[in-house]
Length: 251
Image (cartoon, rainbow, N blue to C red):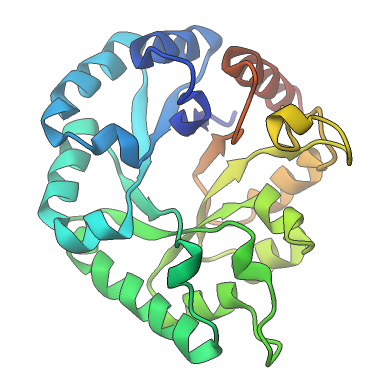
């Protein structure tokens, strides 16, 4: 049976973190994924580790900004050691820093690979987490996601399936193409067109338009070991966590 994780960014607007962790433990989650805001003060890692232990959860993976990975790799490694994180993913690149041509995106992939070298040497998995902009074709027809992975051949990929779909791409060919690079996946859903405007068009998993039965069948042929529930803006995080886990467990 698959153990599902939960991206704590989904609950950022629903304090406290300790309450969120207890809720997730009671629902039956085994793991959580951290995000940059949780590590703003690295001295708080010991307290977070205690909250995880109290809730019966492990933080198997974490999102860290590229500035943290490049600027303080040892701090990232130490945080991961304290929290038990095994995989680190860089989650985003702001619009003004995004390359505009194929050479730029290949170079960005190479930059990621170089930044992750100390983490890989410490035994951590390291890679990239996508949004939608990586799937918008460049003028020459190339796709940034391909170029990132080409430029960084040792990078792992945490495939955010719903963002691929939001970009207008079919996730299944991407899953098949990079089965040996996908080591984690975000499990999220998209509301039917015109619905859930108050939740930015996202939906609880199983309440939207994505075929998660088919997607999970495809993902299980990859190297993915982490399946992370996420909703970018739920109006009720506990509802999202419960409905999504119930749906995935029933598949």
